[in-house]
Length: 210
Image (cartoon, rainbow, N blue to C red; front, side):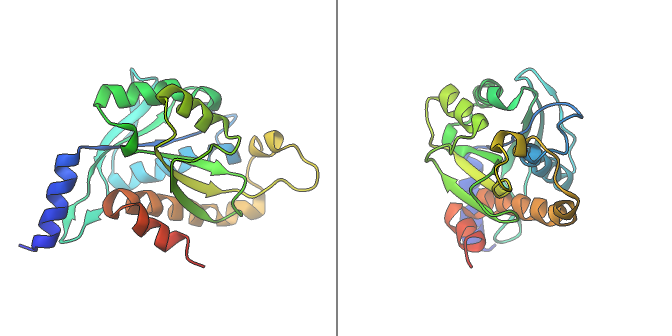
């Protein structure tokens, strides 16, 4: 047996599952909005894990899965994949209920969300810090009583001209953006997968490099 891989596998097992939450607004009206890119990434993670999201009493659609692979060829960690059924600014309640139900601490929560302050097409990761005016993150921080959870930040760029950012995020991706959207979703899904299998530093080194 690869002892390094074995140690990593035992660590993942004993540390318990991760929760990965993709943010968005519910319903077909919002499905293609920039604000819903977190939910789009979550759908991609569910597709990779070959699981279906189903209604849960935490007011979210949820699936349990193993995500990715660990060094040594071991299956990746247990994860709870979820998209809240609430509107963005009420994401905190379902997220807290999910963590309580599965006994997952905030430091093993990954929130995937759109980010205005990152260039369109880029992905960044961080642990803790401010919410940057993002209503979904603010709701989660308030409900959990802490900002110390992981974020996968999916860059959508700033609005053109004098457009209100609130209007910008609630519009669908443009035809030009939609051509590159599958690549952005893949990158963000890769970032979440790398975070839970190899850690924040490894994921940052890959996605923050010029």
